[in-house]
Amino acid sequence: MEPPKLLIHGVTKIYRDGRQTLDTLASIDLTVNAGEFVTVIGPSGCGKSTLFNIVAGVDQPTGGTVAIDGDAQGARVGKAGYMPQQPLLLPWRTVAENVMLGLDVRRMPRKKAEVQAHELLKRFGLADFTHHYPATLSGGMRQRVALLRTVLFNSSFLLLDEPFGALDALTRLSLQMWLLDLWQTFHSSVLFITHDVREAILLSDRIYVLSSRPAKVVRIAEVELPRPRSPQQLALTQAVQLEQELTTLLMKEQQL
Ligand SMILES: Nc1ncnc2c1ncn2[C@@H]1O[C@H](COP(=O)(O)OP(=O)(O)OP(=O)(O)O)[C@@H](O)[C@H]1O
Ligand SMILES: [Mg+2]
Image (cartoon, rainbow, N blue to C red; front, side, top):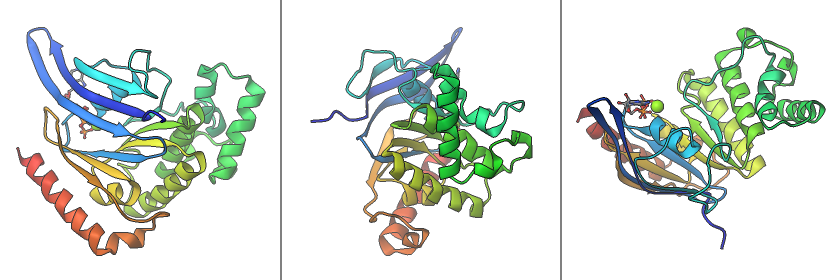
């Protein structure tokens, strides 16, 4: 049987700074099976980005194990396409050049990288902006460019840290549907962070709710809505009930 894309077991994180310690993650267990869309929600500052940094291999856990494709020993850097909470587009590079950044890291020949980048930009609606610079794009377009760069680097496993956090509701909705299209096209496994319960329900197969810091998993909710998803499904009784339940849980955690 295929191992899970990601298996997090008993992961803890304590930051130390001189004599100060900050207990951030208190034993996290989480699984993303191949092709699943899994979301983490939790109060601000509880340790979500910390968890992503650990999975991406840019930080190490204090305890516990992280296995990608069944491998808990090897280096994790490069095994996921990671879009951090504040993705950086290089202002002096065009859209196409920004999207190709990850391929530079992988030392792919320039011509091949260009072909792949252009195909992706065309397929996902950015063909007209290929030669634009980031400063001339809207916020929603910038997030799409950063997302396509992440996908081009590694489409099999994506770590997306609040990619739509700063967008207005309508742009956000269209990007959510756009992301689902991308996820289905590439059969990606996705681990996603959001503060938005409705976004989590619309996108996910499963939602992990974290407590306030030090974070532990307080609820795992399977989202049983059929796919392909549409925003109208959020009005279904089961979606409304789940939204209310998760919102209540989050509000309780946020107050602590
Ligand atoms: N490199 C670091 N060194 C020390 N403390 C850190 C470091 N990175 C994060 N922290 C602390 O760890 C805690 C969790 O931070 P983290 O960024 O993981 O939270 P978050 O859940 O992603 O929050 P938000 O929802 O606001 O993005 C915070 O108290 C933060 O100050
Ligand atoms: Mg964060």
